[in-house]
Amino acid sequence: MIWKRYRNELFIVVSFLLMLTALLYKNSAADRLDSTNREVKVSVTQIGKIAALKKQWGSENLSKKIEKIKTNIAPDKIKQFTIKQKKLFASFAGLSAMEMNTIILKLENIAVQITKLSAKRQGESYSLEVTCKW
Image (cartoon, rainbow, N blue to C red; front, side):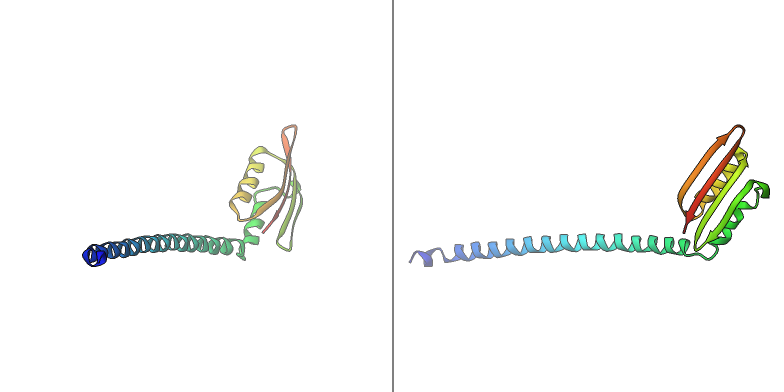
């Protein structure tokens, strides 16, 4: 008997609860969609960066760029300059500060991984040993 009396109020409460549940579900679904979209955007930008780096590191002109390092250096100052299997082994002696800086700057601007860089001062001249790979 009491249920018949408050039947309309009960319908309103139940419909309000259903509406609140639907609202909470909709908000959580929208948040998940936004986070997924953000992750996709980050992934796409990372893929673009990876492709650009792969293009730089896999470039066939990289060996030619490395060969250009020794163009401005006198041949008597070059002790060793060998390129084997995408690795550079180079040592220089009697370099001026300007020559040493140009070698280091050229290496830094090329897409190589410098594994060893040893510079020693001997009076007014420098000796330099470099090992790189790409």
